[in-house]
Image: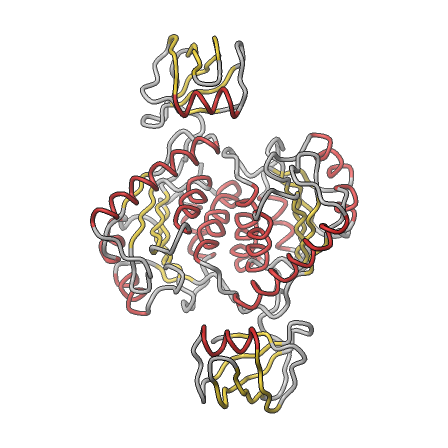
Length: 247
Length: 247
């Protein structure tokens, strides 16, 4: 079933223009009588919807009664990402959204090549927020993750509550990720991960994470690129929550 | 420790030029006396290596005695990928290599937008083979995966031996991936996965996989893009092989 985000969703008939209308009319080619699921990206509530009339630029839709959204992420899942070059963070935000992150924190670290002043930082935050909304729409998720852009690694680390199972992914860590992660999934804990940029984290940054109560964990023998780490780790969480989660 | 691929690796002193020399000298900035691990990409054997002399275009290296390569993939892991548009398959080959695939099979399916004639098909195969070698070098892996490009889905499916734990990832499948995958990991089975292109697999293709003995498995509520599936699934395999693998 096609899912589409409708801000300020209410039941009844409504004419839609802009991005959503083009998505429904042009991209998905819905016509009069076709049904889809509408969800409110702010509240996660959803409604059955039927196209009354459509052309390429606008659609008129009849929304049914509102209900609690079905396709929501059950578990709080925070990801701290060291600011990476170019469009890597865009891609990481997409992957994290598809794979169920509820909170994305992008922060410059010692080895981040990019530096953002305050203006560019808020532009990036807005951009990643839009990317997360778009990715949520495409994967049928009704509750996109929030995006935060603190300026300091230690600030990012302390934004995640201490009762979450927290893992700082560091290639020089001695412990593998699996045992403590499995324990966290099994008890239904909130999860949090932190990952460096292209060049990885410096030892002092890993030590700061450890001192703040994060597990230092390794992903094994082969070095992953930073843009692979998010998908790999949240893939592990997603597959294994099905098997071992407490829900 | 830096790892670099050295074709026809033998012990003793040798002058290197070209890509590897630039990687060691310019990218990693190794100088006289610096050590790295050399591995032979064809045999997977490796040797301790020390830079005798380096400038930007060439390096002279002394290689120690050869030994069996350490950073090899322990488990046979095949991935059948439905041919996707643009550079998506390049990125998927990189992810699969970093995450331990030993055999990559790219095949057009009913919903593949791209069609390859025989010439372009062999060009692509060669290209993906080079990308796999490069990705193996970058992640420190001594045994890059092989790349195959059959032209029919049913041919791809039957190339994987029936004693592997085989999973066809299909969003309409009723069964989750985790239980049977865990069982396969625990008994140390060879693993194999098949995944459609952007538009997913058609029901007839999923049925062909089922008839050939593959499990049909779903990855959960949210629809993943095809370029996310490989990293997510092999991330799950990697993390959980550490915890449950039979090695």
